[in-house]
Length: 250
Image 1: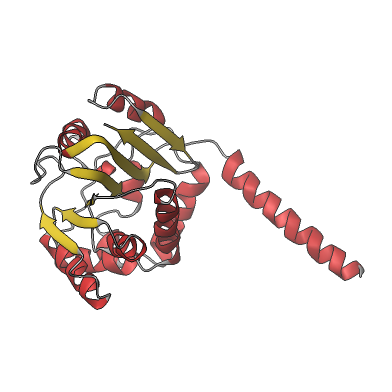
Image 2 (image 1 turned 45 degrees about the horizontal axis):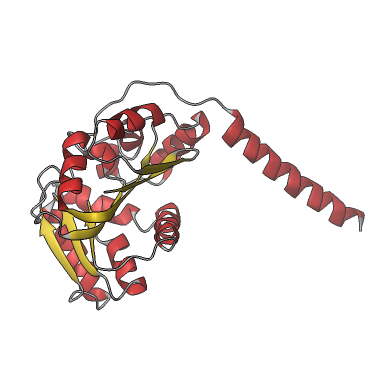
């Protein structure tokens, strides 16, 4: 009986210590460093694809999916910066009535996305388009939902992207953005640096990923200023330890 109580005590103590480390350490205060991603390199594309199968990324996709379930979406959804298709394939299985379009600037990762859709028997449900977020090859007022996951920090000019998203969204259409926040807790920076040394493929280490993406992220203050200068005037922002959800309605 005593051993059981000791076990429970140490488990609870361990959880408290972890929470203290995560929440107690100060946030980083560093200037933004634009990402050099370089995903058109085949080795980099394959390395990113390998990374997407790691548990944290799987948890992230489920988290985004749970966020989507808060809304009654119908019509056409665009995954802006769809990468190798993990998220949009998952959405296609949970929202079979949505018309789906995956957009990415890299032909290398789009080939991987098409392959993933084919392997999951949803290739006929998803249209993939190559293109940049700053110049969407989509008609005005044609889309009901735009989602973007871990792409905001790569956009050369986010203000242009927000204008483009506003243009292609229908009235009352929704833009959902998930991304890192640069002022994450120092604990998270340390955890990411450790993971980079231990599990990150060499091709990503060469371009300073994934730590480079975190350093290229925006702070809450910067995001609020960016949105204030956009055509959107109806937004909700949720800030977390190292990431944020942004919802904007046209």
